[in-house]
Picture (tube, helix red, strand yellow):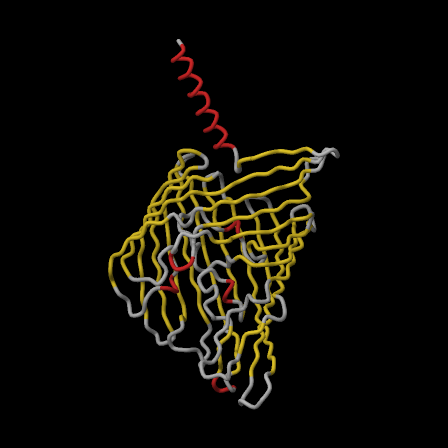
Length: 394
């Protein structure tokens, strides 16, 4: 009898744990209630993911599919990669007023994409929110986190605007379905190419990047419109005896993004962006020095580069346990005569997957990605990857 009782107790505990995992998006560590009836919650959340990737062409980046990193000339060779780097751990604290509203919170998160291919912890998010204000590092206001599809790859469709930034952000509702966000972001954001034969010209972080984003709609169907102004400053001089002078040019961009929930099983999403000097906000060109490049015909002064992106995403749920995503992405860099021939002119990214969800917070499945790029010398290369992944979130 005692053995049966122990077995029943263990079964109940496991069932309770599974039930809690299925309904909870985070683990509450502790709750503290102050004398004024405010409640403080300390919680943890994260993701544990194991990936196996099989590549059929050489790429400079192994842990995420980035079309910009495909080697030119193309080299067909099979290689494999096992990774847990996409795993993430976050720790947060929030204060709830007596009426149940949260007016103060803080959050810190890391993943395991360490330098030089290691799994050392890497800082991802760290910010404080107070009422309508946010201060710290998190997703740029000129991004749309909601449109990122349910894929296994660490890198989303390559044409998306999807980067993390240090910022000060203000958010406020402007109507029953509309929300406006304004932010000042890290002045180090611009990523530029300086002349190789310059007299020690240097990038200067001087004026913050300004962004705005308006969202209208419901939780499942919405449209967003955003804009960015990105001042790009650098020190320059024409001869060794000249003093350095500061030159500032302005990068700008506009973005439209949206999601349409057709029914319980089908969702279509679209994002398009265009402008000049904002390339580092693109998930593929982040910090790749495509915002501005030297123009030899103008004394090697920097000129901003044009960029156009468009992404289409379709998500389908076959039933409550199985889902699939298919997407296509295209990006095109401007065609100015002064662009270096080895720089990327355009790139495409196509992907699809099938995922099994045995529990709400558990996924496993297989995904395939295809990418192609062309440089300004009109040389092309393409790559194909198969990825198998399993993840558990908490």
